[in-house]
Image (cartoon, rainbow, N blue to C red; front, side, top):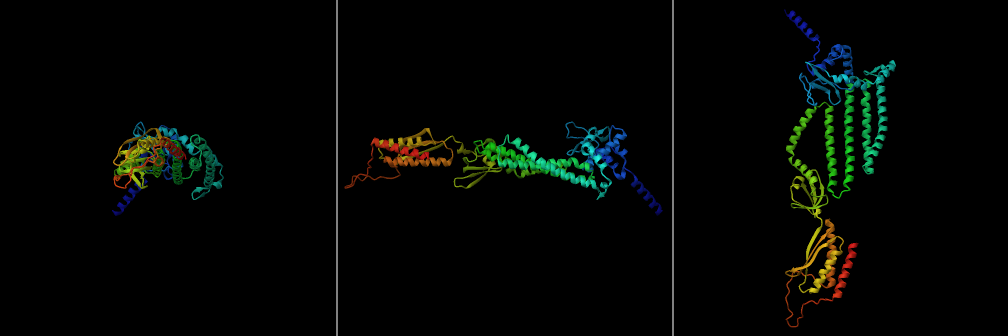
Length: 538
């Protein structure tokens, strides 16, 4: 009885093990598996594989499935069955017209796809129509002639690779290097000819163009390898790794190209901003440079992940969830970024402007992604977050049409009216004589009687908006006024109490004696103003 059970078990296992897979076209995964399984060396049945082709006779269908497999192997496209849908009702949601269609390799081979006809899945009509074109691109007509002309020794194998393949690969590398050298020079001349119509010639731009021409020429050499290497007919394993390396290198070079292109356009923008009066757009240059660099690296990293087989939907979902979590965790950063955008849109100030924002008063030195740097008069630095700065009331002294200067000059109470008039006249002429004052808008008047002085109001406007220039102009005018008072014999008052003692015996009066001679007064004013004009012209 025991022997009979062992015999039945053996027969069952043997029958189960010898049962060959049947043609299954019920879903995209089953169709692709049928195609690939029946073209393997151990299960080679091309007629069965040909059943995955719709609308061709048996001979043409066999030729089509063999060509299709060679195309995929030649490009190193390894099929991952786990990534192919097994849903018989699969619908392509990417295309504009929803249909039962699946593209095997959307990035690298978009013309190879499957479609549903009736209840079964077949390779699409589009794939069959483009099959000869794809095959001719990967295996040109001359490759077969070259192979036939190779002597028998060239077909000897070393580590499962024929000698002619080693030699051809080395020749291909040498050819790619020559193409790289030629393309580098041509690319530099072409870029120089095109861009110099819009960008001023400079050593910096020349250096940037040379750096840009380098990866462009490498991309051309990489493209040559991508086109020619499949015709060397290495196996799928080698092709997979070679093309992975080629695609990664191509992605890296493209990242470099876009980085240098961004640098060229930013240089063009920088030359434009140098012609404008405002300095805030100058500060936008490093922000644009940093922003473009981050965006290019993110897109490049996304592309590299796709090359390693990471699902795009997974990346986008992870990026969305991660971005949402990051947004919650960095609300202040997002607010500051929005504040930065609003500052550049509204332009409430420029670099170098003297502003007051809340309790902070100083010169704007830099506007960054997160904060604005303001240097106070004592040279200390204030870093104000842009989100808060965009909400503050900003008094921008740098946007004034003129700098107003208003002060009062106090003369002694015993100053004669004639000298008061002379002093006022001389101050007016000093203001008019200064090149930075608004000569048609000023006031110098005897406005009142103070506690210890006769008050002379001096109100004027300076055309130079720079704070340092204003202080220089004030200094020059103040010195001229002091000289005027000295020459006229006019004294400035200061808070004091005078005790009159001229009634005491043997005491003399404290009254000052002023020289009111009109000719002397005119000569003094003319001399002081003439000297002042000579000083401000220096």
